[in-house]
Each structure stands twice: as structure tokens, then as C-alpha cells.
Image (tube, rainbow, N blue to C red):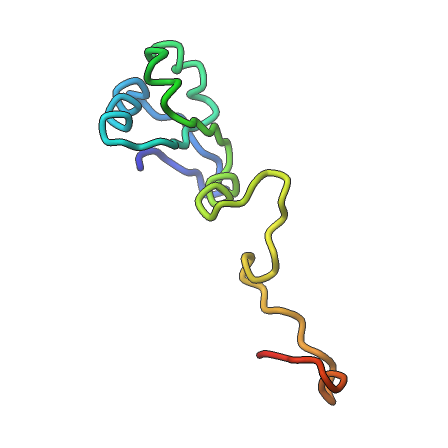
Length: 102
């Protein structure tokens, strides 16, 4: 990983995209995440390399995290994935037969 993130989570552009993608290809990496502002730099990358990589362009840290934990853009995180504990039934417990875990 290389790059810079602002305090508000914005992803800033990086240098050496061509060299980094060549190294990723040589290292057997199949998927890379690049800053959106670097999309124009793909013009310098040979087609053979571009076609062998799945490139994701991001502009905010939320997008990076969603990719890192395997969320697709159309799927919302579950409460457990967001770090939110599941809802707890009201005092008195759950109706008989229901299983409640804490």
C-alpha cells in the first residue's frame, strides 16, 4: 500500500502508477485499488498488464474499506459488519422457542 488519506477520508493521488502495476503483475496480484484521480495514468500501462488486473478506483476511505472486507457496491453492510451489536429483545426475554444470543 502506498498513498495518502486526508483527515476526512479523501484518497489523494499517488505517483508511479505504471511501475506499481507492473510490480503487482509480476508479484501475482490480481486486484488493485487506486485513487480515482490516477485513472488517467492507466494510459501509460501496457494493455497486457491492464487486462490481467482488476482495478478499482476510489475517492474515499469508505470505498477502500468496503473493498477490503468484500462488500459489493449494491450490498449494504449488516449490523455485525458495521460493528453494531445485534438488537437485543426487550426486558423479559424473547418469546418461547426463539434463541437469543448476546
